[in-house]
Amino acid sequence: MKRVLTTAILCAAIVGLAACTTDGSGSTDASGRKNVEVGMINSGPPFEYMDKGQLTGFEVELLSDVAKKENWNVSYKYMNFDAMIPALQSHTVDAAAGGFFITPERKKAISFSNSYYSDGNELVVSKGSEITSPEMLKGKKIVAKKGASSAAAAQKVADQYGASVILLPDEPSMFLALSNGTADALVDDSAVIAYKEKTDGTELVAIKQLDQTPVGLAFQKNSELVEGFNQALTQLESDGTLAKLKTKYQMN
Image (cartoon, rainbow, N blue to C red; front, side, top):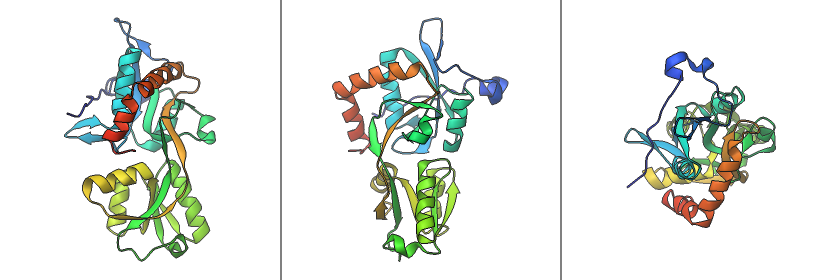
């Protein structure tokens, strides 16, 4: 049976998003548990997605396991990926999950946990496409996710081969654009692409693996929560839990 977490959108409904701020260390409730609010996309399988109205996925279950070890009470605030770093910088959330690539540029603005997965951007087309190499992208449109590293990767390919880029907010709209011909090619996390193919029969053809980057959980800059997360992550690696989660979500 899949483990799922019921989401809690805490203060936004009461006083408005702008008024809800955290100090990045998690507030403590009467029982001594730390309340940790995590910015979360809900449409990026296998990392996080909705299943029968509830949030699940690799990072959701990973956070649940960390929370048990660190005595955290984790709640989620849904947002688009491009809103996550600003939300961390404005102290709207304590952490953010969305298959975050750990990059030097991002580390200037926010902090990261240790990496728990290695992923990369991949350029793909629909099966049957006339495009069989990057050189055939001239005049074509490449779709990528707004605010994600795939946007920069897609733009780099577009500049090199004479294509243009369409930026959309999430994976469902990206894959729809590819399937209906609005876009000719797509750049996204290779894990997301592989999961899409395995779970719903979408047939895609890989044109080029563009990079390979460590993935981790994002936190407010210099957050005290990073140390606790990393300690729990080490335990989950040692006892085999992390490996089991990767197998469950077909990320091996």
